[in-house]
Length: 64
View (tube, rainbow, N blue to C red):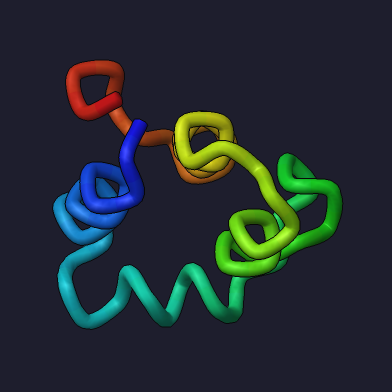
């Protein structure tokens, strides 16, 4: 998954304004105690980060 698609999905689920805030501030066990930005910076694949976000916040299956 390209990062542009990842960020589009984040914005679609959380809204434009909140997506980046969530990505910077929300530490997730699914990402090994990292934020979304931290996981991406650590080299995680965007698709794996998206799957972790989906699992953590209950993104509906049709939006995954």
